[in-house]
Amino acid sequence: MARWLMVLPPVLFAGLAGLFYAGMYRDNPGELQSVFVGRPAPVLPMTALPGIPGVADADLRTGEVTVVNFWATWCPPCRAEHPQLLAMAADGVRVAGVNIMDDDEKAVAYLAEEGNPFIGVATDPNGRNRVEWGVTAPPETFIVGGDGTVLFRFVGPLIGTDYETRFLPELQKALAGGA
Image (cartoon, rainbow, N blue to C red):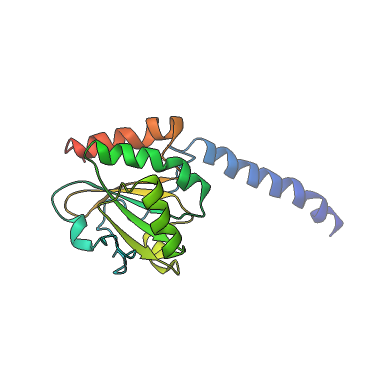
């Protein structure tokens, strides 16, 4: 019995080390897989921020690519990526927002102060819809094709090298019709 107890820790360590080693050499070890990529986008919330147009499921099936961004005013990375969302909108990219687990008044004030890049903003005050989309924490952004199919999921703020090397090429491919 004591012999098994001496063998067990090295065997467990070797098994765990093997799993970690295999994980490091998969295609993209830092990317969280999304079960929605290649499938129709989940339903968007029907609620909207006061005084700001909402966004509906039909807005994702217009024949144009739409970027769907899950954000909140209490989220520092969301604030950091906001200038990039404004730049995308200025470049003609359709950006829809889903404000999650936030206070409507704070969200409206934030967009009034910092600028509103969104064609519409749905609200998800309880975070229920965020779960349907598989969002773990804001910000998360999805590229949705003109037929409503999720083409790409990006976890984290749309800033820096990760944005430039992973998100931007996928957006350009989708906008060019190569998705």
